[in-house]
Length: 115
Image 1 (cartoon, rainbow, N blue to C red):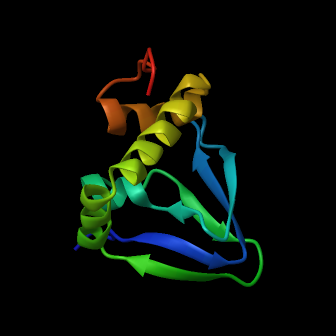
Image 2 (image 1 turned 30 degrees about the vertical axis):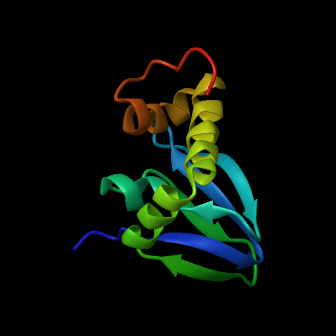
């Protein structure tokens, strides 16, 4: 079975990286307590598109995909924030983040207009 949970970081710092077309790693973000990672795979079941690595001691809570979906249904503002984060990544124009656009909107084209 595919790895489909997301993580809520409770303490510590992690870096998020992805491989660009050349195969080289690219730093996408640093995350800290209160951030979540792995939402895309948890929601769509596709393979992970990034690697999250702890930058020292880190505590996280795993969220089952069903728990995340229930949260998004109960709290539309959380769903809107998650969509807005993906939109900002795509609007940055970074080719390394186009996989996020493909998974979120079904194409490499960046979204246009308000979130």
